[in-house]
Image 1 (cartoon, helix red, strand yellow):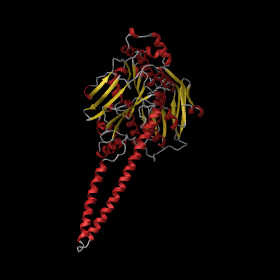
Image 2 (cartoon, one colour; image 1 turned 90 degrees about the horizontal axis):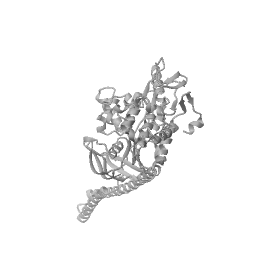
Image 3 (cartoon, helix red, strand yellow; image 1 turned 180 degrees about the vertical axis):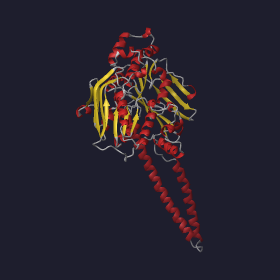
Length: 524
């Protein structure tokens, strides 16, 4: 599989997503496709999978799949697919005659995926995010492909699932091209990098393809940028010094010309000749300026700042006193009778004042269900809260635009402020008016973060908030949330996010909610 001078043009936005991209995928490549939100990573994977994107894009150059049969793991399933049972979806992707039952049961064990989930008549949309990812990985491997195309395979996986995914990528003899924002996964697995950037005000695409580990590429990329920046600054500083000296000479000759005596025509002539020479030098400097090495272009990180003067609960104030005898699939705060599968029992969570708490646990243990109940309980109190769901469209209208999602009124001044804020999150002008269902997962994550900032909330309730953020955006979000003065209750499997933000980590399992010791927390 290879691409040669391949370009992807967006007619509606009048810009290129990719331009003159060339690379080949070799048998043992574990190629990580990285780049900012909305840079075309998922689009490229879909094209490599042979999908027709219609008039949305115009293609040029060569995309050669050489008869390779890919297995494609999408970033998300359609509403129609989510309404199917796991078994129905499995057979839609893999005819009965092609199923290797021996491999099927080995993979179930390796993925730590219960067969009951597949045989159950429940809908795919009722599985946890991590269970769906494991199920899709199962199907991808059962298809016995020539190449794996994985779009955010680490999303929603628990720690055990992440280890399984890492082992799969490292051990498979087939080439793997994967999009991921999990920095630890990139560091552990990638042996080649395809970096897609959109640079400058014109968003000119630049693609870098190298065969080296992610950490080495990241460090080399940063060092090269710093070196180019240093050289450009030195050149421009030296040029500025020459221009200043030229200006001083010009001003001195101009002064002498104004004060030369009419009785000394020879001196006047010499000064006029000198002025012509000075002006000729000025023109040469202008040409030299046009040839100076410019500062290197680089995608800017997002800017995200929470108000530091929020109305926060006192350290002695009871924020949450939650007691749940049982947690079932589909439970909510107002459930009076058991429904759905039993997930856990005897749960207690007590919070005073401002705390930053993370809940971890295996896929399907009920973390998202519990977080929804916690959010309901907090909203019943007198605290202002803001909630970011795991499924973004639980809380937003897919037909809405980013400006509409963030605006609280129709006032022009507010729309202007919203556009400015979206610009700080690296939204392009055309993207501010797109329907939300046309944005990438990372862009939707940034929109929720913007909503959090505007909410002025005392507590944030976050379900896997960093899973779709790029390696450039994620550190800025972690930094902003670390500086956020209010409380945070989150579900996450992002190892760096957990290590940098939370002073308390609870593990949810069938027997309840258990506070991890500092030693156990340090091992995450």
